[in-house]
Amino acid sequence: MNGVLAVLLLVAQQPGAPPGRVAASLTRLFGPGARVDTLRVDSFTVMRVSRADSLLGFAAVGNVPGKDQPITFLVAVDPADRLRDVDILVYREPYGGEVAYEAWRRQFRGKGTGDSLRVGREIRSISGATISVHAVTLGVRRLLAQLTAWHQSGAIQ
Amino acid sequence: MTVTWRTVPATLRTLARWTMIVQVVGYTTSLVFVWHTTRLTPPGIASRYRGANPEAVEGAMQFPKSFAEMLTITHTHLLSMAVIFVITGIGVALCERMGERWKRLLVAEPFAALLVSFAAMWLMRYGDARFAWLLEASSSVLAVTFYVQSYLILRELRRAAA
Image (cartoon, rainbow over all chains, first blue to last red; front, side):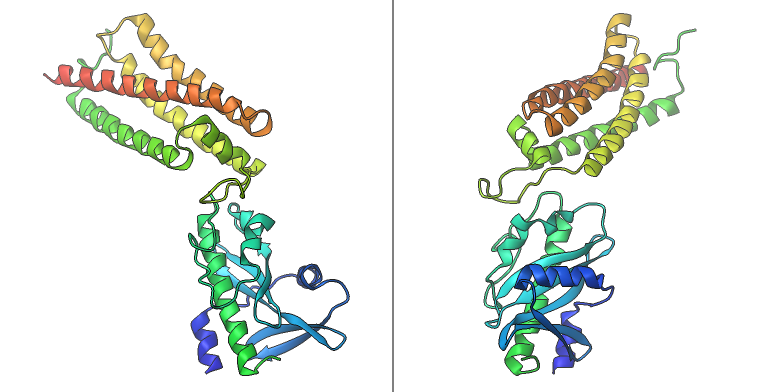
């Protein structure tokens, strides 16, 4: 089931992001000093973030195709499967990098799988970055669904 | 011997006629695109280049254009529009129903307006948003000149073919 889900979701984890950038992103999202354990679910890598005995959430890196190049992003969820934030780890296109701006990313915070997360509804587009906006929004929606499904099934805990 | 539309081969007139028709369609499409993105108003143009407070506006967010984007917009538009006005300039130069001074003015004016427009675009982006008014004015002059040139050329071609 999970294997089929992973194929259907089509959020590739390659190409990856520089480890330093992932670490910096996790520090920003969960605070410094958090413990990060790597979990393997099917062919996917999920990061479990905790401090002392307390679970802070999960994070995963994904890729979506932009206009010509993949966009590498990180999705972090809290223990209630709500989005903590989204980070653009590597943006390779010459235009459309505004999807990394805080003003756009913060629209995702607190959202769960019950939210539509569609451009033009809950997510506003960006003038001049339409393709990237749609790509990242779709990628976040799929990765959020994947993390939530794994968490609720006990595949990650 | 003076070369005019009347003296050039009919095949060249056909080429010129269809080139002008396609250019008019292309230029009009670009104006529709600009209307769609800026509503052709100075505040809309300024927001497009300088960005706008996401909380203060509805619809798509607008962020300031980067230096690289500004360079790309400038060189692609400046060079391609220069080619358009070289074509229409040759078309105007071959017209025989216009005075020499008017022809020279119509040929030179778009190039001056192009330089003013793109200078205004940079000044608006990095200087003062009010340069959007200068950009709007010079771009309007540019568009009007293009349509006047196109009308005069097509009229001349029709008469030369008669």
